[in-house]
Length: 339
Ligand code: NAD
Ligand code: SER
Image 1 (tube, helix red, strand yellow):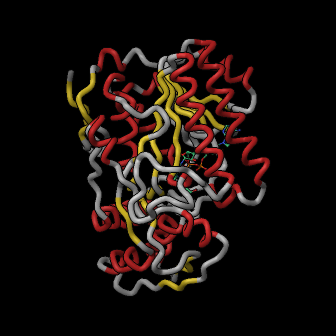
Image 2: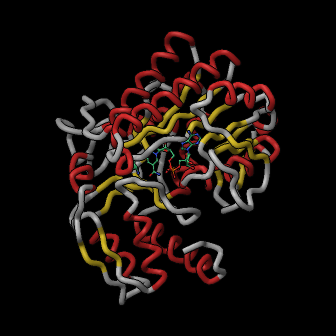
Image 3: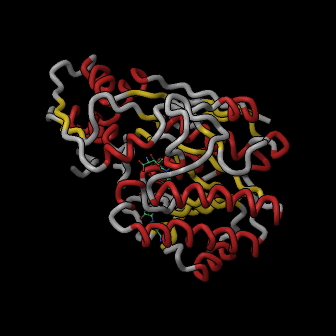
């Protein structure tokens, strides 16, 4: 057992590196906000040759193994699993909350059919572990919005949330019925600099940093006092791998764990940004995403994750803001990011 340092010099928990080097991990939806950061993070831990990134289209400048995969195509998924002797699957492909409302039936179809493809191909091929990302969107009416508990009645109000809540239950079903080792977290809104987010209600909290770094005024689609659960990408990635590497016997949740991070409103985030950019300006023009945000909790209780596998977030709002402004500032200066 050793401690592993990521490229960001963060230490993740002790793992058996010999065991980890025998894993071959397929990441589906690898070009998205999480996948762009996760593939590099997993490569640092398991070895780049052991990570197979996949998405609808190849990604420019991708180092390492990449396969084009539309995961609605179960046959192609099966071929890739066999070709690369895949032992674990991280299934990230989905249509997110705000974009999903534009076409509810297609969103339900895409989000659930792709997950069934993953579950069935994994079952047929004896895949050892699956990671499924759920969301704070599973919560809705009749939950304590000040601190949504691990165990709550789920009345999601978006098709995205409905698809995630259903998928959580299917994860538990496949675990109980077939003994499959499926692990999942309910991510808060994720804040990251690596790539732009893809159609979520929490996206304002990423877009705002791009405007701040460019010296532009930000128009926020949520009201100034809308609190939502959020998490910095470093914490999200570390939590994900800590859960995936936790001893199976420690896990009491086979639907999805609340992954707590931080909670703030647009006006609190603005105040944090102004510590480094005092002239930063924001205006508020709430749109249809306000009602989605209003149906979600302000914060979530991560105590079950803490108890079962030691979850502890590290980034508070100012630590996150400082790093986001630094990293995006560097990116824009080097003109790496397409504006
Ligand atoms: P994203 O929209 O940025 O990326 C999704 C990726 O999936 C895209 O690269 C897209 O091309 C790919 N994709 C879509 N359809 C596909 C298909 N048929 N076959 C293969 N690939 C396909 O999303 P993200 O923010 O990276 O989120 C990843 C997962 O995490 C999603 O399931 C999302 O619901 C979940 N999640 C994200 C957040 C967040 O704040 N980013 C929060 C909670 C949960
Ligand atoms: N960040 C995601 C969204 O806003 C939450 O799952 O859709």
